[in-house]
Image (cartoon, rainbow, N blue to C red; front, top):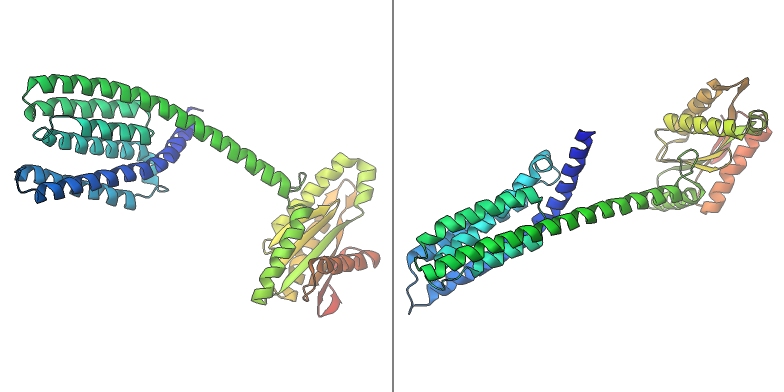
Length: 369
């Protein structure tokens, strides 16, 4: 039970982290644009000497940002590595981004003596990325430790240094609670989204499938016949439509009840599914009538397949009764969906009226199999 919960949490975090990548990519691109613009300005202003160290660190940050973008392009979000270590990967990227902003802030002390770059990037990350509270707390502690230890080396004026350290601490605490709140909102959103998707899938299944057998229902039968006719009109492939009707099913219902009859239908549906692997489509038209669609097969292939199905059904015994079926199969000759179905249905009734338990398949001319 514990393993299932952990797997569910890991799956959820993977989905959240997939979204996080696009947000982090945007942040890195913006940072790169700002740093690039700063570098151009520093190099173009001749009147003020910014020093080669500032320009050098800007170039290094640009290079590091390029590595991050390359990482985003190469990471496989569906691979086993990401599924297992997505939290570590995203957490590491966030720490590097914050580290880049802190380094930029250090060197900005010689120009502006403020920490606005660090604050701006911190809240951009917190507002964009959804990370587990445990992980973001570690990242914030590490990044603030780096900030508080390194800042005195670049800012010796205590009237600036102390407020910066205090403000940095307060801002990190606020950032943690904001991140925690947004993460819980994200979790709730994904759970709601998953529940809605599940309900939609259930509704889609119920609208397309027969509730008893799980096969496609009558509405989908007509839809798929239209679909396959449109395909073979373009491709010129063979298309066969089969209609199956169980022989003597009413007798089973009358003798053993409808509940038993439902079990019979389910078993028959499974036999048909298991023996019609080459069928493009299998559906239940209603009652004890089933519909099959074969594409890109020859008449003798369809005939052989249906003989095997007939043989398997004849082996099945229910109480003292054996089952058989009548099947009519029509090859599409360019007619409408309605006429195509009507022709297959009429061949089925020809078999039923001439002794049952057989297949009538046509290919330009009618032949009994």
